[in-house]
Image 1 (cartoon, rainbow, N blue to C red):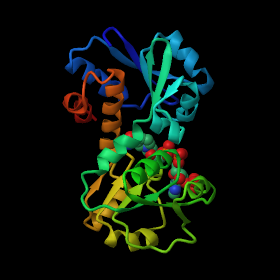
Image 2 (cartoon, helix red, strand yellow):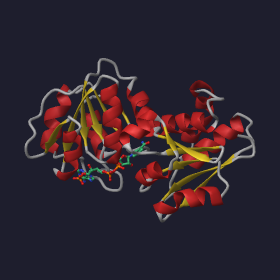
Image 3 (cartoon, rainbow, N blue to C red):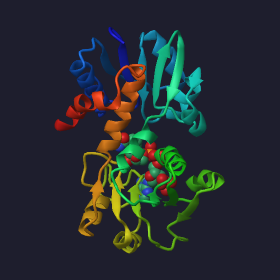
Image 4 (cartoon, protein in one colour):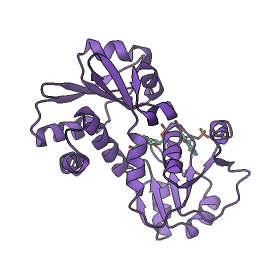
Length: 266
Ligand code: NDP
């Protein structure tokens, strides 16, 4: 991948850590390549822009991960199954699509021991891919969401789903904030009474929002629960994307120390 150009496509892209993460890995591994960001407004132009800019690979963020799926000529089996692509690599003129968010999340939660029953607060795009990879890995996933409409596709896929109105708190080993509640505001992802009933029985809590001590994490810590934010998920999806960019020339452990340095900066 020497002399190659990579990018993040999305809208917005200015806040992203991905350029820093990938450029630190290129530099640390002595690879003459560069990763930039591109604000893509019309997702339908993804393929055209990819080739016009002469790119070798991209990551895709909100709101184009579904459009990226349709832009690919070849899909790996997991991306094919979930219909969401966040990493594309060009090989001999064809675009190969992958999803690295979900395996990144799976790896991030694997440090917690004795986890079987997982409760997702939220049912958006991130919940979709991660619920499926967790179930494939043997976890039992339940979804609790504010609105009923987003739960329909999860019901069709056989997941247990609840809204705040029809939910009775039970014992879950891991509780995950999969919503954007707490990202730009100070709101909790579910009514406090529900969380207060769930937290004493949980073994650990995770928030996919990164770099912030969200109200959900604050509440979990007040119940003395082990917690983690979304930083490891972000780091791990980036490392897995880099493995694809390098066509498996570099493995996870080799990339890790270089990309992790991005999290030393604020
Ligand atoms: P979506 O827009 O697809 O879904 C948003 C979800 O959040 C919905 O379930 C929505 O519920 C719920 N929600 C939003 N606001 C509130 C609120 N105030 N109270 C309760 N529920 C709320 O989002 P994504 O799935 O794309 O992203 C979800 C989160 O994941 C974001 O915070 C994002 O930053 C994070 N993320 C982190 C990554 C990482 O690497 N760490 C990678 C990707 C995403 P409703 O249906 O009722 O509207």
